[in-house]
Image 1 (cartoon, rainbow, N blue to C red):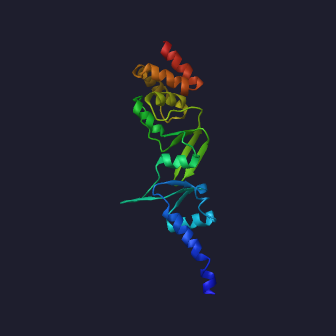
Image 2 (cartoon, rainbow, N blue to C red; image 1 turned 30 degrees about the vertical axis):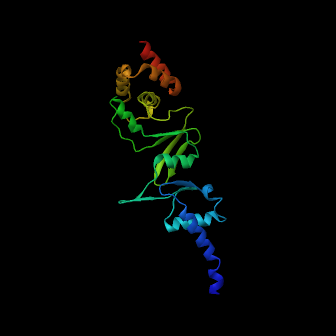
Image 3 (tube, one colour; image 1 turned 135 degrees about the vertical axis):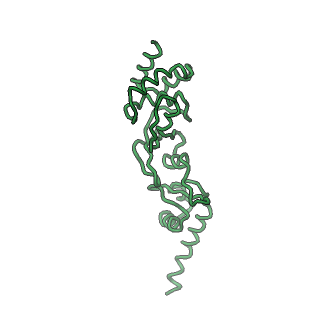
Length: 203
């Protein structure tokens, strides 16, 4: 009886161990990454999670914790979002970044925005929430000109004095590179922001 019950368990343990050996610390994986390596993907993934080799972040999304002196480290935002979207085209940032423009904004936001081409909505990935927003265009990295235009696009959603921010935004307009600002307006501004900035620039 013991021989019969232990026989099928050994290959399962062996397969799980082989999968564990191939995991890279800090890496984010999707379920399909294991499909060609296992004939019982879901079972093996459960076993790897139970062993602590994998951490489940969302349905079909896993992370291999990288250990530090203070415990396991969360996955970097870019790895996490790339794994979730299955895409490299996205921009991750916080509205707190607007504070660097010197427009008098001081609010700190516990919010992470993800501009992308595929998903829209708030998603829980691991122990964090990400606000995914589908945008036709966005830069590969943050620039002052993009943040300036994006702040004006989202002015009504900010926890700031709207009129005070607008006043500072108009005063600071000459501090931006005119060519880069025009490119940012053409690429990223909504209709209301385009109209407002044209009026300021023509005044």
